[in-house]
Image (cartoon, rainbow, N blue to C red; front, side, top):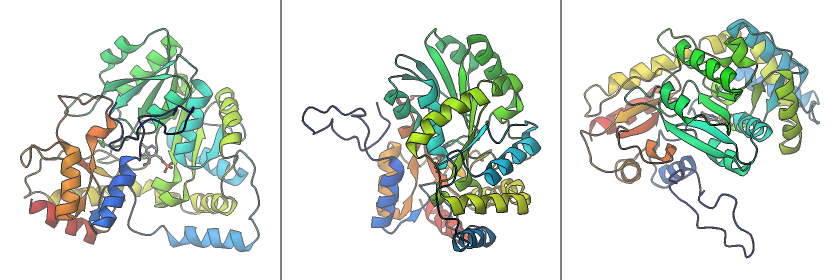
Length: 396
Ligand SMILES: Cc1ncc(COP(=O)(O)O)c(C=O)c1O
């Protein structure tokens, strides 16, 4: 398995076999550390190099000073759950009960963990699409389940639904989808969601929708949230992250929306994983969502301008690029520039040319011979950083 580039050897502790013997430090940590060591521009890990809205930060300070510093409720503060439910109703026409269907979590990462842990049992199979976000597979395995990896079809990284139908067995418990998609920037269309709904209902499957980039979608496309499809939502956990939406990835606050029966099981796990999440931050997020709904509504346009700038600056480079449809990642195809594998190239360019990116092959279980030679660059950066990055990339 090729998931991490820095696989640790199996456990060195006598009598204690590692549960994840092939898992080492994530590629994000490795590339960010390498970027720091070599003083390289870091377009590898997905975080903005600009500030969060000052009004949001002021609200955190205000709530701290007002004494909101003790444990909040396990499910999240009511004001934030209500703001989430209102947003989901406005954007996706799905009415959900903030008390029984919305849970605030320590980032989307915790929500993904709890949803998988609540659903997957030993011997279950879970369908994931490669390149896949790196937490899904280990969390499935920790439950004794097995991830069934289906590659997204090149060159557009779309789902081949016939392959999905062929992969379903009596042991299939869940399908995990991620739209807009990290690392490729592809988005699912209405037809994909209809296929997903049909299969989930027919085979009695649960679905986990990783929608952390729900607001970062371009060119007038509509985000096809699982929440929009009633029969699909009835079997789904829908996960999002405030880190991506409000430029605060370090706050690690996210949420899960799911029907009551699924939420009940989800919370059984959540209460023993983190129990709850920072009180003043939750109140501040609730205030900001209510006071500034335009912020998330305009986020797509904000990042589309950055994507267009980055792509425009690279017009004279030797890379081939298909503009990203969503997320803040852009894939660059380097086949005209090098025969190196993507991991070696990403390391080499960080050390030699001072620009860090993420190799996409590490998001595959098995190297896909048909997969294009691409590196992932994060364009959630100041225009000046994008300009500097493009200068380096155009010189290669
Ligand atoms: C697809 C995807 N899912 C989940 C996460 C985790 O989000 P959080 O930082 O809120 O835990 C990320 C973060 O990069 C992501 O890209």
